[in-house]
Image (tube, rainbow, N blue to C red; front, side, top):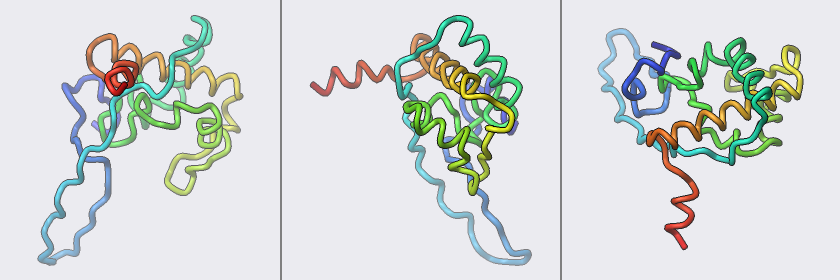
Length: 150
């Protein structure tokens, strides 16, 4: 269940993915669970033509779903990109996906595989999926949150 969150009622765990190691024969106890801090809400308005969204779905399926989940629905082990703040900014998105800003933590650059047009299409697809979740009542509409704070 590393990546196939689509079939789950909820993420495998509300805790962010982390690695815990133990010494054989050690007496340490499992550390307490970390608090779930992901705000399940789109980080930008959706965009993209139908053609761009189809391209985004195709390229996401070919390059991203193996780690981040089919249909952009994570199992909770790795980040669910629908809720990632990085999707909210084209510059941040490009820095991670094309420039490798998170290479040290396992997210390599895809500049050798994908064009800017293709990575923009993936971002459009992810935001569309986030807004579909809002429409289905599975995520918070950030516009409603902003209006209630006025």
